[in-house]
Length: 121
Image 1 (cartoon, rainbow, N blue to C red):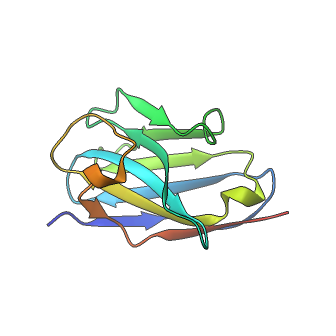
Image 2: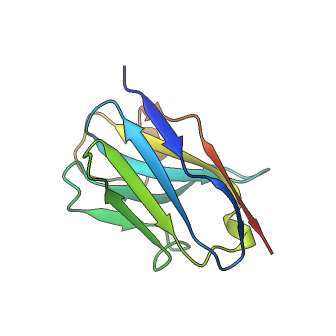
């Protein structure tokens, strides 16, 4: 059973930064998704098993960086210039089958419990 534990969410002012962390029980292709109140879950960023390939949503491209931590089972999401529309619960997800990143939530079999990000304007 794959376990994912997220941390790093919180309250930040518009224009500020946050770094989210996800610790997995193994090494997988991983992604971050988010879900705002009343909205569907949406893709944020993903990284390959090796860490050599990354993809971003249009809304986060240029403002976010996904990377592997020093412990390769850890994935980090650095978010800068946060805006009120970035307020959501952020979820870490792992794909235990494929090594390449994907934007589709259907390909991720394992999910963390979520961490809240609130951006005040």
